[in-house]
Length: 124
Image (cartoon, rainbow, N blue to C red; front, top):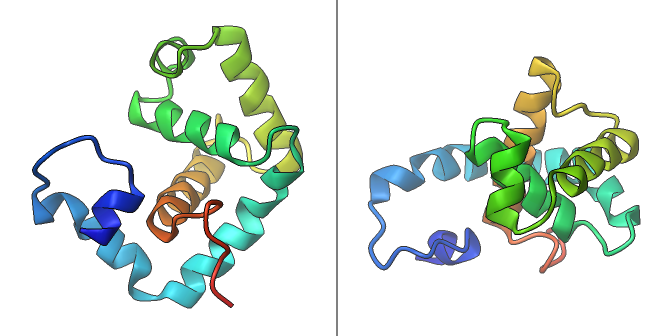
């Protein structure tokens, strides 16, 4: 239940099967914390903090890396989404359009959500 709350799931019923990936990701919590810290904490330098950029990445990945659909879901312009993706690339050094970087970013975003970062500080 805690994991589902941290993921901001709007569903009233969540199948435990749908949360298995988070159990895998968090099985080695220190490694996940290291990944989030290394990949995503630079996003905190952005104006407005890391949260809007994390939301953009989460929606971008959720809709199959389609910027127009991510923009619709976020209620922002496509230009805003592409700007944010550029900021993510500039701040983190990881390119959401590159297959190798995309996997790292996606895993880090899932881990950040499961850890409830940046709302809560990362464990030490």
